[in-house]
Image (cartoon, rainbow, N blue to C red):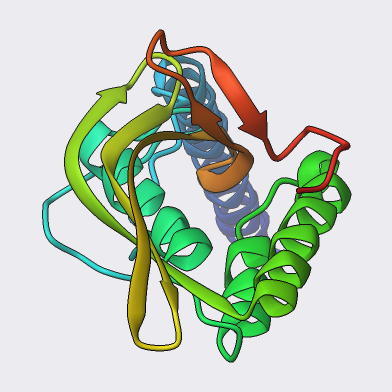
Length: 199
């Protein structure tokens, strides 16, 4: 082999080696930058969800939702629980249970089924006219005041002021109903979805 050929081949190998070293160095640098980016990144996960009815802007993070979202979801739950006829009770109960936390599902289902049986037995329908709402963003709950109207056939047989509280929990940006309860004038629970008693 000629010395010039050996020299050319050696130069090619050195150039090839330097090229690989440059690529390896760039790869290491890129991995280092990605690692730094992951460490410095904000790990808060915010997911934009669409509630059943939209009236206001809102936001949701891993374990917290905006007051406007809590208000809208609470109103959705409350309307399904209180604006009920014997014909719609089963469907509306299933709508509520779709949003219920796994650890509260059985108890809430039992509570709603007892309410449905009472309505069917008495052949009544109810509706709740909301007159006020107070959202506690820290507790992820909303209190609704208003008038609960009870109807027998087409006649209103009772109109009673009531206050209900709807409590939520969020996990991985998903909202779950944990409790639905009636409150007395002092804001203390009268009956709740976690009560074992039926009405």
